[in-house]
Amino acid sequence: MVVGPGNRLTTMDGTDITEEFLAGSRERESAGGSVIVSGTYQVTGDVGARLLAALPGIACVPAVDLGSPVLDLLITELDVDRPGRQVVLDRLLDLALVETVRTWMDAQRGAAPGWFRAQSDAVVGQALRLVHDEPGAQWTVSNLAARCGVSRAAFARRFTDLVGTPPMAYLADWRMTVAADLLRNTGDTADVIARKVGYANAFAFSAAFKRHRGISPREHRLVAGGGG
View 1 (cartoon, rainbow, N blue to C red):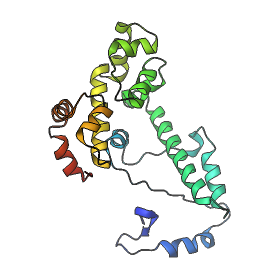
View 2: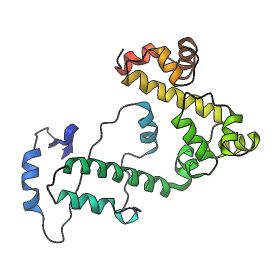
View 3: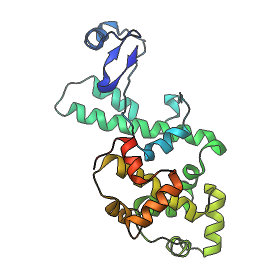
View 4: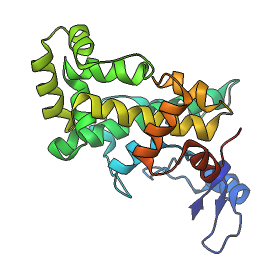
């Protein structure tokens, strides 16, 4: 069985069996049996791709390893038909995904990406949150170090050791990642996007984008199917 967009279920040859499957699901349940709960996400964009690239094709996490009762809450909500049910299910599915991914990542220890592991560090984690939340701010190694309460040299060394790249290299890559999604998902002009990701004007932004991605912002927008 294949779960497709809109949670439509099909056989391997493409026959839609959504209604048939859902109608018979309760009759198929038995005492002591297992219930499979599935959910799908339509993911596009470079920000999400960073996380997906760190995951295997199948990441198996035993329910007992989750540090949250979210799966029990999800099953409970499926058993009732109350107003707002779909809204609750959507939020619970989001929580289940977050818990599953971070539990899997935690279990990988040294194999998880540096930017993920570093988020739990008191200093570098704070710097990553600042950069992620405000990519357009005029960050430097000095002002990031000051915000994190450590010396410039200690910050640069610690960031590079934990993340695997120097602070400014990480910042530049993150800005281009955010910019790529803005080009894909908005009709903002290059000048507007430039200011959102910390560049003075469209020319400086376009030069940086082409240096990092090998194509211009306009070419990326055309390839990605973005607006504007």
